[in-house]
Image (cartoon, rainbow, N blue to C red):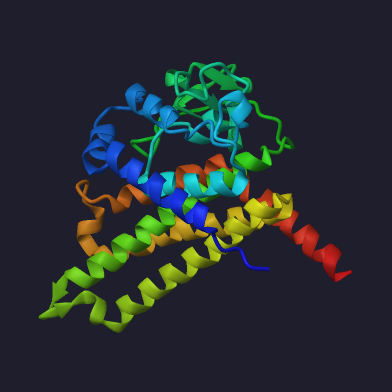
Length: 295
């Protein structure tokens, strides 16, 4: 089975990338980093007007009328742009929460481990946040709270996990692109650092992890099977977290500076990996399915 994007999906990806490049380019990214955890409501409404949150709503209800594969494509681009805010929760609430589809309302939700993103900025919260305490977030673009008492056996919504994996994929793509670009342009000993074998290997491994995650995420978007989603989540988390670390290595000391964007990829990937729920749970779900197939 092949999971290639259709012509319409390729056009959708290009359109979303253009919109995000216009409304959340390098300057607005840095402004958001300096904003101290304040969500840009103007940006949120721009996203709503572009159909970001109403993508999967039927046209009869004012939505775009597309499906899960298209949502995955859009959220991959959001992850590549490092777009801030509780995007997944607001998207999933469209059609149920007034104003969510148009970006007039900000919706957040209790994620894995009781983490709640952007709680102070949210108009609506899905799940109980009684006793929530503020955390010092490693990601300057993601304010966090934690709910102390969360049902340890409660599973996150599969679409929540899948769209989070799509964001991770997009961030992995950004980290890979940044590493390759730096390897091509940064010179040492009179030649680009990408000419050195060790750097070539790192960049090749970055790309392999991205493509493995992409295939898994796209396939899960088609099947919407919990086991496929668990596998996609694990591969996307690895591609994003390990990919950002490797990208930092390619950048050398400059990658650790505040002015570089690559450290933002790693910090966002860390937070999303926690938001997506217990890795062990995904591993056990996948292992259980493999044992059933083997028996």
